[in-house]
Length: 278
Image (tube, rainbow, N blue to C red; front, side, top):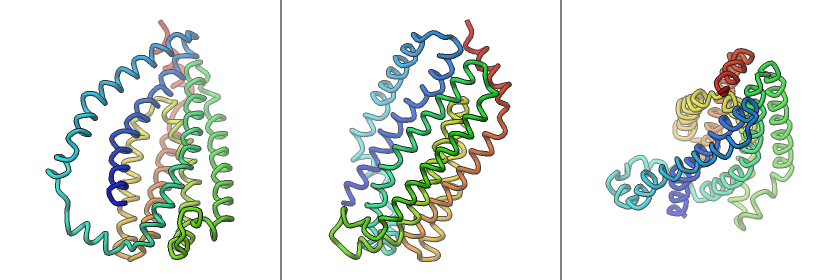
């Protein structure tokens, strides 16, 4: 289980996330270019360029890392003290519960991704057509839809809380541990959906760098620190880990919303429309 978990994490970081990051760049380019040029063929051009760039990234950078991963991990080594400290804090029931919670959260993340893509395309279309004044309406609709969807997910998860773990495990102790931490995972879905909407807005506006900076500060500066304090210092175990995740997600929502509120949409619409004119 440890090898499978580590392999999945490594593949996600070096494969899935790289592919999603490259592909979602099209949200900005295609959405803005289509309405500003009214030329559908430009979408095919952007798609071809994106495919070529991703093939080069995977062919020249990612594939060698995969092929040499064994030697790479051995060369990097592992900090025994950190591993021992983590192993002492995580019992078997917590590991099983975390597997259930993580799998469920990853599945629900697809809803957040869909909402994020829809928001980015809507904002990009308005900016490309030089109709930046309509962007705040689309932003409000995206936030409301994210909150309502998250509230529905939260309610459904909480209604099934007592029996949620049993389809995944036959162990009553693992199911009980899952039920205890499940409210935090359910609350995270509301924040994750809202962050998906906010990230989509920034991506549609071409402010991908701001979203990336917010993610780095929120998750590494707030989430990781809070999770460490609750997990190790307070001894909350799995509950503390998810408390840190929620703290980071909440900080991310505040940071991204602050960035969105500082954007002058009319001015940005004129800038985007002019940029794509021949």
